[in-house]
Image 1 (tube, rainbow, N blue to C red):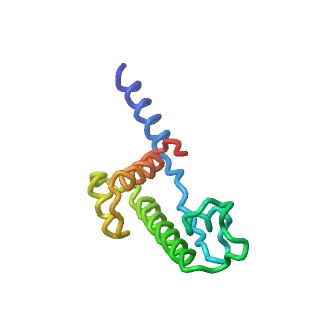
Image 2 (tube, rainbow, N blue to C red; image 1 turned 180 degrees about the horizontal axis):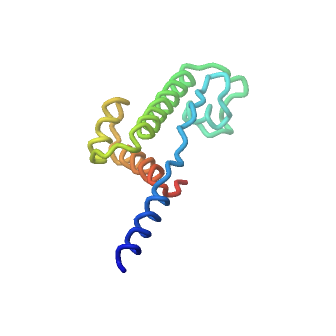
Image 3 (spheres, rainbow, N blue to C red; image 1 turned 45 degrees about the vertical axis):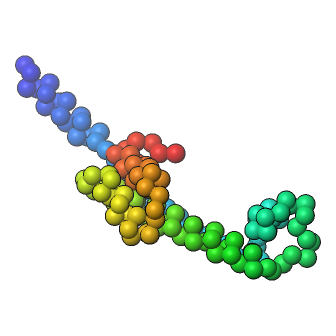
Length: 129
């Protein structure tokens, strides 16, 4: 009597197994010094927005701000992209995270681990926000 129940349960588990609903991370949009908002210009200059000169179009501070921002965006995209690719790997999460950190030249292990976990949960069929 147990055999039919066990086989039915095994079939249901197989039929409802994990489904990979993950989407690849989108390509990031990079900033340029010409497109900075007033708040971004203020951040770059270290001033409150009300003190940013109206004619502030180009400055070395803007170029440095844009370079730092774009570097951070590229690293973030690299981590997301590599974690997405490794979502179905069975290796230990910390090993995968360290490999991603080495590939992307990233030093933030907790955030990298969180990203790996996010994509593993997604690959296992869990909802990811």
